[in-house]
Image (cartoon, rainbow, N blue to C red):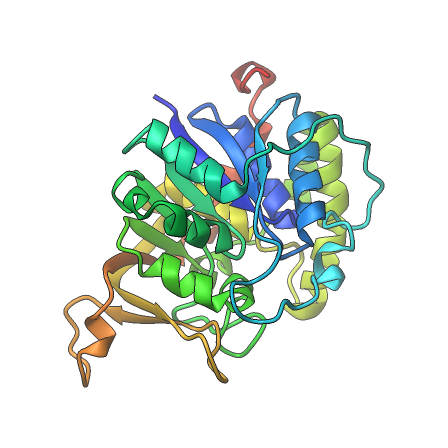
Length: 322
């Protein structure tokens, strides 16, 4: 049976790549997308989510969500990384659809309650929508199948501060709530995603196989990879958000550790994910006071990228119908 997911996203170039996987993979049932600010403002995020599904010939429900952090001031969207339109500043076609009347948090609560113990939440942006869903109905903690979060860093260091990854930094208070809620959670952070590089040759293959959607993926990739060439000196990009779906479908490609996770919400360490491995004693009890979770501490980068490319280049007869 396909795995039903709700994809919480701020598209975003690497979000677009991950959305393509969710739309394409025959073993994923994409119930809907919920949008958040992050890589772009909330209106652009919703527009891009609608556009990407339409380009794939599918009509996926989209519910608009968080426009700003729970507590802290909102930082400007990183247009130098994703472009002002979130997709590399390429020209985009018009969209036909519109978002649902309900909010992202309401959509999450409704869907999880309708299919208890079946749905996986995959969140690849700031996690305010999940925090809001928990506020509306805390019982969903015991009704989701699992929660997969792209964000954070255990050993790798940060990408927007020396210690913080962007999604955690953008809304650390929401992250603290979501990562310590007590539901079955796996964190897929920079320790895994920085092991993976999607090359220009990989993207050429994907573009040829994905039609109109492939052209948007390739065009936005060029802008994104220019940033990575300057920032990290790599020829390609790290497909961060695709790694969250890769872990869900192919967990054997990742190395995980179990333990206690917290998120710093203030000061120089704001947004840092702090992990205390299971069974390791530390001075004081606070480090083991949060629920157990799983975190990715490494990945077989070549194998993950091969899986991404294979998923997005399979013959059309294996692609989900619209």
